Length: 55
Image (cartoon, rainbow, N blue to C red; front, side, top):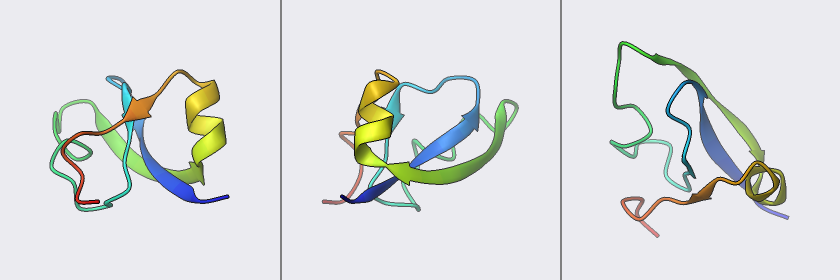
């Protein structure tokens, strides 16, 4: 089981493998930080893999 990064706040559509991904930290007016959760939990929340993250 691997962990991924998700944003706290609005505009949560994807999970991120790269904590420095620009899409994770975008929209500063709604960004309230990020947290790390298991990939399986992110997928249960209907989040998809980010296409911008470095693999």
